[in-house]
Length: 137
Figure 1 (cartoon, one colour):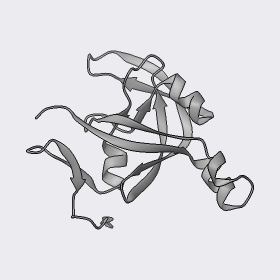
Figure 2 (tube, helix red, strand yellow):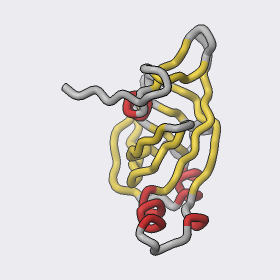
Figure 3 (cartoon, one colour):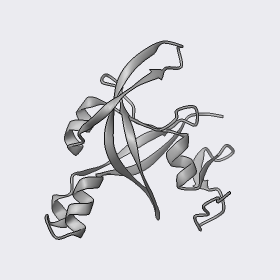
Figure 4 (spheres, helix red, strand yellow):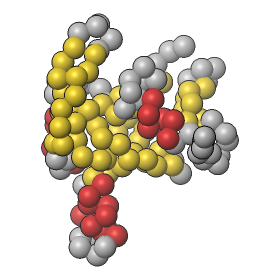
């Protein structure tokens, strides 16, 4: 299977809430549409420092991250960021890897949006078609 990319829109969750409550205008929501690499081996959303600043995301803590080359690094974790893909959305705390040239869309947001990688076409698709199915145990 090759590398899969997906166009996603990232939005500052606080801004979205403030717009819904009439505190700011919708056009004031800090957001950006980017092409992310879909990485089912990554746990969550991985962004770089420049993107964190552009979205105005505050740092909420730190976590250890283990990378594909088996190195470990302490990375900052942001407040929630909304991830939009077509008719789906979720919100996660992003992991900030300062010099990362790629945005990684990891397993947790993929699962929450009910998405899988279609290996034959090398695209993201809904795991259960066009309807989002939430698994409840």
